[in-house]
Length: 99
Image (cartoon, rainbow, N blue to C red):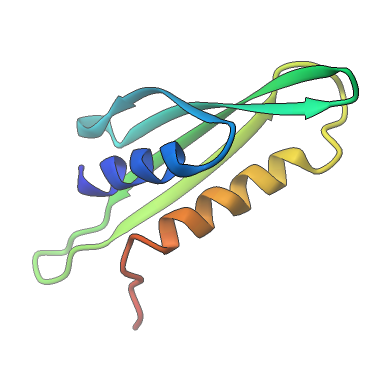
C-alpha cells in the first residue's frame, strides 16, 4: 500500500502527469500524461501495479509500469520516456532491495 501511495506522489511531481485513480489495496495507480507534439496535445495512459513480496522477514515490492498511447501507431519513444521518468521518480523515494 505504501509503495502505491509513493508512486502516486511521484507521478504528481512529474510535469504533464495527472493521477486519475489510486487503489492502494490493489496496488494500482492509473495516470494520464499530456504530451505536446506538433500542433496538438496527445494523452498517454500509464498504469503502475505494485505487488508485495514480503516474506515475513523483509518487506519488498515488485513494480510494473506500462505506458500506452491513446492515438496513433507510433509514439516516437514517448512511452519509454514515461516509464523511465516514473522509475526515476520512484527510485528517488523508495529504498531499493539489494541481495
